[in-house]
Image (cartoon, rainbow, N blue to C red; front, side, top):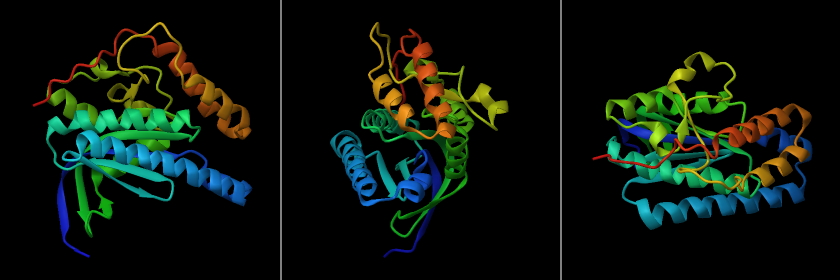
Length: 236
């Protein structure tokens, strides 16, 4: 195994599964494990297919325990559309199959080692910090990602994100630099298809976790049919 370390800037999308530890501790029987294995198989198959079909030259991913990390292979802004497109489809697929997941996208310094099996750095830490701070099941852009987009004259609201009503817990003081995905890129008169699985998961969730599902449902009901988020990438 190559133990060389590579340091560079990159776009990072960090996802973690809500309540993974408590699920295994409190209900870690063989049936639960088999369900999780099936969900992981489907999630990883979706991720692998999306990347290999359209974006193999631009992005790659890592998976360990309850965490999925998608990253760009360079620091170029032109690779952001690939990462964000895969991230959007990934969270929608996971929620539709009742895998409770949340994600955060950041940009900045990262370090890769051991044939890209080890990842650390400032961008990874920020995506992890903001991901853990979310009090819902959403996909957000962290301040570093927002700043890099604005530096390149890209407006997150033009590709399916809004900057209001984002359920953060301890980092809400930075909410003016955080954007959240509306779970659709354009406008529609139809209800979001994720509402049914979200309501189903909420009905079976521990009482302490129900607020996260409720926040997600309320956010979708308010922003899903908005006319702001029209996809318009012009990265070079």
